[in-house]
Amino acid sequence: MILGNKCTRNCRFCNVTKALPCEVDENEPVNIAMAVKNLGLKHVVVTSVSRDDLVDGGSGHFAKVIHAIREKVGDSIIVEVLIPDFGGQLESLKTVIDARPDIINHNVETVPRLYPMVRPMADYQRSLELVGRVKEHSEGIVTKSGIMVGLGETFEEVVDVFKNLREVDCDILTIGQYLSPSKEHLPVYEYVHPDLFEEYKKRALELGFRYVASGPLVRSSYMAEDAYKEIKDS
Image (cartoon, rainbow, N blue to C red; front, side, top):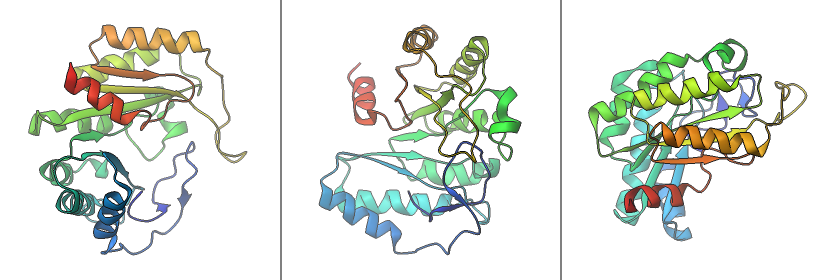
């Protein structure tokens, strides 16, 4: 996770600290690249807190990290970025796209009806548009998104999210169980049965996703390397 450990958003499902962010560490890109090289990673996922305090939302820093990894490791490594919405700024998104990561992930997290409760500073349509704009500007980049269940959504609402994501040509989908980090966060409304996760996966694949990971323990980076390989081998 780059750009510090303090977030400018107040999502009620997330355990990241909400506070005034720290200064951007200009040495972070090369330090991450060296860590990736020393660890011998083949697939790296780079994410961040939301940085609404920065003019570009932190997109330039993402680009620097991607370039540094390519410089230190070469083009053999798969670089996946899990990005915030950058406040809907197209130029910020293009900055990340132009850095040429292999995968751009942005999670919609929940169904539109629950956004005011779950993601009060985010916007469902803005997140959908972000995923779609990636393909508009670079067909070669794999797009990915994810949703948590167990927050009070209905089956029909979840499937509608799948349809919305396919309408913007999202390639990979992750579906996992929401777990409350503490008593101060949103409580779990429901523990979804594994059979329902299988049904969600079936419906998502029928809608045309190229890869779907669906299960109680699935998170946005779950089996990320395998997902990318399966798409490229198909």
